[in-house]
Length: 386
Image 1 (cartoon, rainbow, N blue to C red):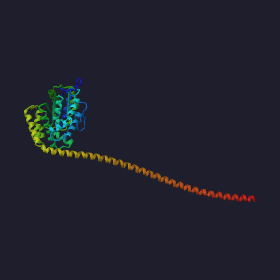
Image 2 (image 1 turned 180 degrees about the horizontal axis):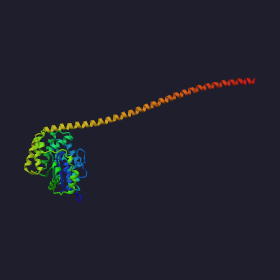
Image 3 (image 1 turned 60 degrees about the horizontal axis):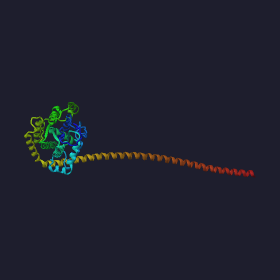
Image 4 (image 1 turned 135 degrees about the vertical axis):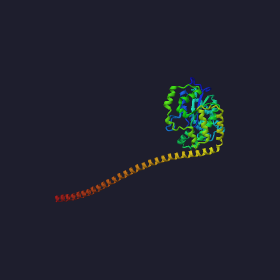
């Protein structure tokens, strides 16, 4: 949806923010926003084969800013320790608030409806809400929900992350999202249902936002983008509850949210608010173990990074050694060729020296012969004279 004038004033402009845990289908949902005319920007992260084959649909500039902010407060996407008000204050003091406002204004300067996603926003939502408020935007949150077991399987494959850590990481994102979006316009979308019934789920989003669906674009989305072969795991609630590593609180959270996503319960019910408060309290009780897990995981991650760097350096060193050995071999062969040539030239010199010696001896003999003949001639002349 393009604006006719290029005025940078964003008051009243609509913003759709897709929130969710990593590997929860946020990319598929964000791409689906295009069927409603939502602009996603022109600097999107490229697809990565084997990870997100159809693209991340994530703005590179916003993603880079989120990564930088997390590093500034000594955090990362895999940290279980929650971000607090002091962290947000530090980001303000470091100038990130103004940077975020300017960046968002730039992204939305010529559009009336903009959408973006980055799973890191779930952790930084208190910060971004202030940015949205400063820009006076009409914000709608679309929350991606996926079975935590599927998330854990995906993270185990991609990040070699422990299943238990993945479960609690999923819960931390969910709690942060639901607490911070409590009074906002929001909608839960189950990723597995989106893959099965894209028309129905996108119509739910359209109904909430008031956008109209372009059905030509919808068919393209279903036929050209969605691919069930890329949905590597599909688990139901019972599969999760039967997993011995799944904490009871995670099973309870997913079961509750699944009812909301399936419209069996309303997202505005006081029941959900009380559930979220309970999960938050229980999660907070584990803050000390989570800090230890974060330190261990960060340490292991650094070890892996160092190992990969050393492997690369070893590979480079092996390549250099191989090149040097090749050069040594070439120079050895060259030296041997020179030595052979030198030997051949020495033989030639000896042959020439021998030939010179022979010719010198012949020359001496010839000279003696000439002397003898001269004496004979001299004697003959003497005789003739007499």
